[in-house]
Amino acid sequence: MNNTAKIQFTELENSAKSAIQTLLYFDIFSYPLRAEEILNFQCNSDSDVNETSRILEHLVEEEFIFKLGEYYSLNNETALLERRLKGNEKADAMMKKAKWVSAFIGNFPFVRCVCISGSLSKGYFDAASDIDYFIITEPNRLWIARTFLVAFKKIFLLNSKKYFCTNYFIDTAHLEIEDKNIFTATEIFTLMPMNNTELFEKFMSSNSWAKDFLPNYGKKITVKKREPNSFIKKIFEKLLSGKFGEWLDTYFLRITLKLWHKDFPYYNPDVFELTMRSRKYVSKHHPQNMQTVILQKFEERIKSFEIKFNVSLQYV
Image 1: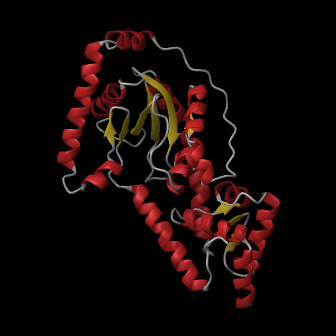
Image 2: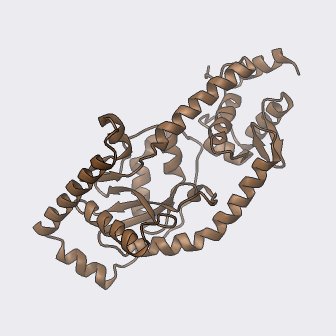
């Protein structure tokens, strides 16, 4: 292996650095990628799939990365590929249930759009996975929608979140995600809208900043008209449309905040704001703080790679 050739290659090829960084990011999840997936998730916009494949083959030759069948990885471990393929199969099998639950969630009062998020939205599911949902609600009724869904989970599902993890809510008047980084951009682009794609497209337009991180990502959205509200949903929304509904929504927000401050007294205000953001128009329940964890691991992997191969992954 020619170390001089390796250093020159990475210094001259930003597309190579971008491909390596993409593999480093998904290595956090032990997830090998195909060439077209690396193109989708890399931050360099000057490549196409043929150029990306050429770069990847060169990186394999120089022993920066490894090729496992049609997949690329930083580790030469077939177990990683087997894990991914099993997870992909499990995700395919789980989609039927996820779609049914999405339709069920969509029938709750003031819910306007339901999206599958998390690992399932990326085509992976295993024994440790939950089915996560990203939900858009009517303004000033987010906390009513959230509380009804949480109450259903606690009462009828015995608080199991395996197939019913509703951990992120925003409303239709505040579609832009406040945290802007590679983690949130990846989560946004991999969302799978299960209804009301017209609203989902507005959400994507409101988060055009994500293209700064993933300029190549392109996903065709299957057109799904907004489903007509059920009779029961219409009744609840009518009953809660006035001042009482406004009061109840604010009350549920206050009660939830009080409980969360009690459950997580060790969080400083900044961490609480990031992981448990609670305002009239947004509700996050991410106590594991995966955003910070993933971003820190990503930076650590970049530094470790640079030290190991004596190269820089900074763009020139």
